[in-house]
Length: 423
Ligand SMILES: NC(=O)c1ccc[n+]([C@@H]2O[C@H](COP(=O)([O-])OP(=O)(O)OC[C@H]3O[C@@H](n4cnc5c(N)ncnc54)[C@H](O)[C@@H]3O)[C@@H](O)[C@H]2O)c1
Image (cartoon, rainbow, N blue to C red; front, side):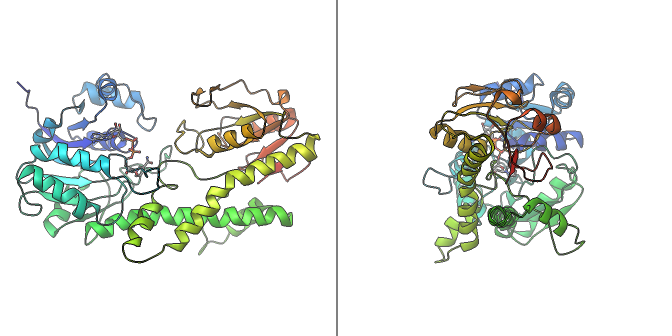
């Protein structure tokens, strides 16, 4: 027989979003059950071992020991919880179309355990209409209850930024939009218990689009400075200097940095959820497409920069050169490899005949590439390429010892020279 515990919240999906979420609620005194499909993820959590760096094991363990966080693969736990939060992946299919199958599967598994008065909140990033048109019918079908009358249903986007420490799930305002007023209020009440500020919007669609706007805003602005960086390359102007100078304007400007390409689970993927949905309305989202095109071309541009640096700085060609990539995760000081542009750059310069090694204190191994992080010995390579600017690395020393440096992040903070090539 199942042991019936009581939980305040069931969080479906114990990943980059679900884990910080569980922590925030648990620290606010709530009892949380994490439901995941993966037995080993569940077992590790129940031992107090975290697989998500934003929730270190030192933080997780006491919450697990206290019984405030529990994990299970059994969706029956939904029946023992007052509210259900869904934080499962929303990737793109190989044809770059939204893949909401994880949401659908979660909905089917949750539905039989729904009770009268339950609250279900979707947090996964997705196109406007998913909560109402995809999630709702599956929950209604499987539960025999109606959304609105029987259970509350809302969308509340997650804004977690892995590695960020100045804002947390607790201190980042939470946007909520229910399918009716009672649902919005129920969701607002849930989050108010753990989050400092809740922002109500009039519908799940408005909340869904809010999240997409936030990510599209980043993608478009990054594309803008990436394009500018390429022009600056031709005009021999230091784009980093220009951006830093523009950023001294106290209003009306926000600084975005160029780079070797987009990474992570969000910015390269989410905007295309809207592109896809817009087609249904005979609408082409041109800014999104253009930004995608510019950002996707960056690893190719970076390959040509590496090649030029070797030509002019060392009189060598990419073919046959020994190249050390420094930093391979998609952003500084974390080990997250999802969609990292370093992978593309490694592939491109390998195809051009370079002998590639990498150094990353956060990523011990790239299995698919059959590479292991090597010691940082810049002098042993024809070129050292900084793809991700981890703060633990001594860039002055790196420049001193290296033969040629190619810096895609302005980590070296030096003007371009024969030795230091920058984006
Ligand atoms: N990672 C971020 O920085 C971030 C930020 C904001 C929003 N989001 C969005 O949040 C959502 C979740 O992303 P994530 O990064 O946490 O993903 P993730 O891959 O880290 O975690 C998802 C977890 O859900 C589990 N899972 C998958 N299908 C399931 C199912 N049907 N039932 C139960 N568990 C299931 C997986 O095993 C995995 O442990 C996505 O929509 C993403 O776009 C992510």
